[in-house]
Length: 345
Image 1 (spheres, rainbow, N blue to C red):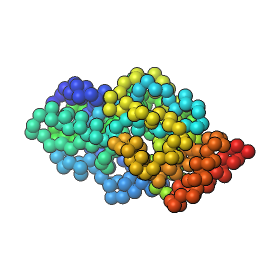
Image 2 (cartoon, helix red, strand yellow; image 1 turned 45 degrees about the vertical axis):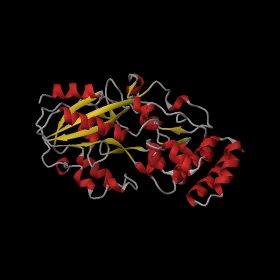
Image 3 (tube, rainbow, N blue to C red; image 1 turned 90 degrees about the vertical axis):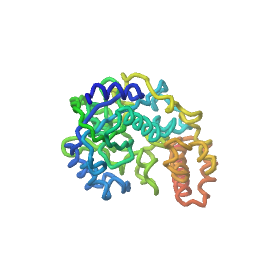
């Protein structure tokens, strides 16, 4: 099948970006292993266990695979970026988490693409759900280049998109990777509050152990105290390194309706978040990526954000959370009370 037909089918299904890569090891594989060896994955064991080796050999996911169809679905809407919301009393939830969980949306579209390719081929679909270096294969497929912030950047559409892959036994002519266009720009590096974007073997990578997204989503224990003050009001994820990227400033507004913001998820009031029960948390964030933080982790994040707010009125909810039976929440609330005192003193 010609790759032009792949692009056409993917566009009909709703994928704004598509391309084809060979099912073979990519040049980034050794760099990924170096990233793992340096401990930059933090506590994300799923990135460092036996699955790490599979990432360099996609055929282990599908023995008959010959091609990898890579797709991208945009989620960039007309809403302002995080730097436009200056009210310290409101938290920030990463814009990718405002709507439905992208995993199900992407897998559904990939399954439809596989069906339209016809019978007679074996396939498996993934959307951030398998040990696969998806940004590297997306680069090989021509969807964009990997920026200094490690996001995949498309020249005309920026970096606000989800990635998915369809491994297929079909032999398809591959696309070509685009040139790197970050140049000498260091805006993402300079803007990162916790300096999580670090050099690695002549390029740049993200040390998860200093990343706000890692702290607020993946980390299950306590957030390192030396980074709490720099986290600002982030309660789930962080968009800063994409907000400041020049390629996103000129990116078109375009997204699937499934990713439209749910009510109350854009810069929600911190005092409201501090009050929600575990059941309310489940109801408010069900089928959204925010549920990944889990209730206790989310309250931990809210405590840190309130401590960074400089708002004296948050002392009362923080005192209540400081007496929580959950020591993780209580410890972060106590830290927040002390830090709030220095901010309001």
